Image (cartoon, rainbow, N blue to C red):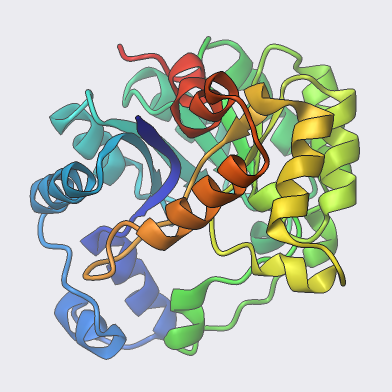
Length: 297
């Protein structure tokens, strides 16, 4: 069984937001033609396409991430349509005046189960009181995770559209996630891409905090920042520090027609097999940990 802990739901609202940021009056169809992507269609159409894609690839369940602040409704609708297949996450800008209320509504009324923070993107330190208020809101509802993007941050669609990415990378330090995780020990914190280049710091944070998880998603191109390190070695080191129970397989899949990224699964499966990891531990990485954190409702 395969569960994917990291997929993006690129709805028409997401694409319209990017078009607005360009300051042009482009339609979603025009943006998609420029990107050479398939237009997402309605939320229902995109949800059904994801179901067909996951069926074809043998994927049981997946996290869908609303990938621009304010698009919670799209993912919530997808989850309502297929709660057996999808867990909903949403991107949040902590600097927004209604960030805490938006969090409360998303996790209590809309049924979303993960808050995604991008401190480098939104220029808000994880030490900021606004972030603490958000996590405190999360802590009031069992079963909600906080996803924190750390390290290198590159958003491919922004680059393709020529949108500026004025990220403050110093704010994405996994050691700051540890401070939050220690303060809220019952909240699961997920650091994607093994810390995306801040691997040592991510390992230190996870070693201190048993509620910090890694997701293994994306091409993990951050490996090139650490000469001599391979993805296989990163897996082995993460396993030695955090254990198999705190690794969540993910792909970072997002748009069509590319669809679900089989190659990432094949590469990571080969690494796990090559590391002679037991079947129970491999099962935990590729599906069991996901089901434990996000049981079917």
